[in-house]
Each structure stands twice: as C-alpha cells, then as structure tokens.
Amino acid sequence: MRCEITAGFLSLLLLAIASPSRAFEPSEALKVTPLLKTTTSWDGAALKYPEGEAEITGLQIEIAVGAETGWHLHPVSSFGMVLEGELEVSLRDGRKKLMKAGESLAEVVNTEHNGRNVGKVPVKLLVFYAGAKGVPLTIKSEPAKVDAAK
Image (cartoon, rainbow, N blue to C red; front, side, top):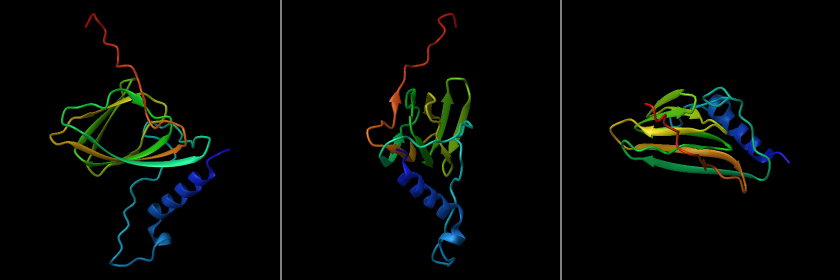
C-alpha cells in the first residue's frame, strides 16, 4: 500500500509553502518564504515515497567544525535546510555540493554520501524525512577506499 497520507500531507505542505497567496491571506503579520519545491533530489534523481505506513520524522543535527557525518545513505526522501555554518556534501562519484546557512535541498535517496563541516562554526541542520514505519532513516556505509599507491 502506498503512503497516501504522506503524499497528501506533503502535497498540502508544499502547496502552502510554494503558493502563499492560496494558502494564506496576505497580511503584514504573516510572511511566507518558499524554501523548496522539487520532484528530484539535488543529484537529479526522481523522489519517490516508500511503501508502508507513513512516518514523518524531523531532526535538528549539529556537526562540529571539521567533523564529518561518515559515509551513509537514506532509503527515504528527506528535505534539509542549513540553519548555521557551511556543509560540503560529497558523493562517491566525486560530485560535491556546498551548502551555506539559509540554503535547502532534497537529499539524495539510496545514494552514498558524506557531509563535512568546512566552515568556522558548527553546522546546524534541520532535516525532515518522509519515511515509513520500520524503515531506517539512515544506513551507514563503509568508508571510501583510499588507493594505497597514492
């Protein structure tokens, strides 16, 4: 069974974010800033919802200066926003993305990646996962193999 509740909920949320004039009556007391509207992760892969009972998870993650997340992947779609600092995300194929405070993205799904704090302050991330009960948010991977000849 597809996660219809998750899809419907996220569709309404994205509609509210992307179309503030439809979701809210404009006023001086209410400011709506669209953060992201996409059908693909930052590497261009199509986003899909997992099978099973919907489960939304929100996390605030902090990465110390110079620290890394370690190689991992997410089997579910997620939306992340950098609140503070600078984060460099690397894929196994060598592609990299630099994220600064205030920037957001749809994270890669089922693609190994590593995040590294390349700034001068701790990175603070806000991440929401569109998952399913019993499905892990993150799966750790083996570290990248270094060529011994180098």
